[in-house]
Image (cartoon, rainbow, N blue to C red; front, top):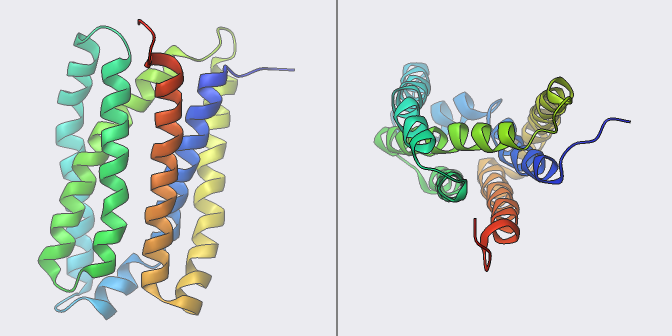
Length: 196
């Protein structure tokens, strides 16, 4: 039986909670903006989505370069935890948002946060994959994200219909905080009271 490194398993668990949160929001995001935000239109949805992806894509390579230049994983974990905590605040921001500029600001912060998360997570995960199990490890990670998105998308629609958008955003925020907690526990086990 193929085995995953313990740290890789914990990283996959943190990723599961992180991405399941966005899976909850994805199917309702456009409806939320057009129905709940003053001035919200389908164009606003498109520009908000574009703002997130452009921000993430432009910042991410610079942060990845810094991660590679600094020796050790302590900086990687700090950036990963900081990004995860920041992205956890975004759904709480949606809960209070009323104007289009609120959405744009939140999507910008989400882009910056994900630019911190993605290269840090990928670097750490890559270093902790068991030799000889690379394809299997990456397939488990991809499967985990796919299942998180799939089940969360269905649940998010039901949750929004039953309890409203606010309930979804609160649930997502707490899910992301759980992801940050898992990452902090990994960090604590690896670095606190230990030398790198």
